[in-house]
View 1 (cartoon, one colour):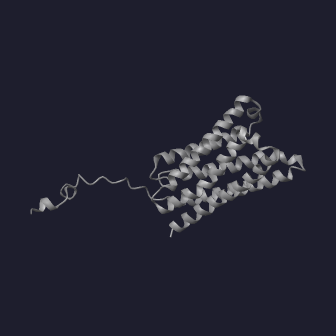
View 2 (spheres, helix red, strand yellow; view 1 turned 45 degrees about the vertical axis):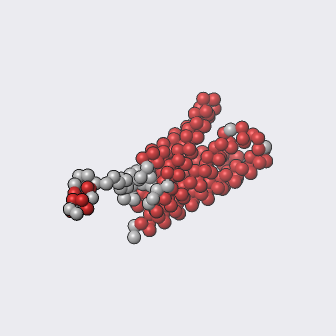
View 3 (cartoon, one colour; view 1 turned 180 degrees about the vertical axis):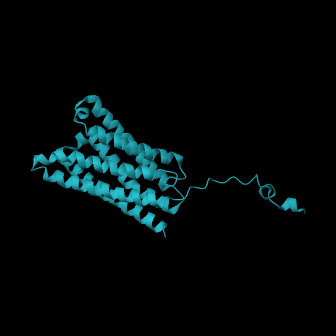
Length: 221
């Protein structure tokens, strides 16, 4: 039997190699660590806002600072999502995942800025725009997280799975407080869901921060 009969075509012709999936870019560990730190900052600011909101029940003057805390927390998490959406981020093998995370990051900023302007929320179209942008943001973040979780890269997969709980909580809160579902729950139930949702948001965002920090630092070794 001749050598040409036993040698694969790809070996005989270097230009005709077997079809292989694209090799993902190396993980940008610095971006992941910085994103984890920003996620932690967002969780801490959200926790501070939650505590100030509880204190504001008896001291109404504290309500004025709540939008500022919300804006800072949103900016921190938005930058974190943007940092992990690059080619060296958690969705390196999924262009759709990268786009989804960037959409989530941008729309979160838009929602935070619009919600910071009282005139926007006072108008019907403004409120509807904020609602739609919020829905787009949480759905995009969930899609990006799921696509990252499906990555065959162990570190990226873990980072994606860590993001899923936070996005699910955000989606549930959006649905409950922006649709007739909230009215169907009743006053007492909606209050419990509101407080429980904020606590879950803080816990899941802290989980994201720890997971990303650990993954980024371990990869650095």
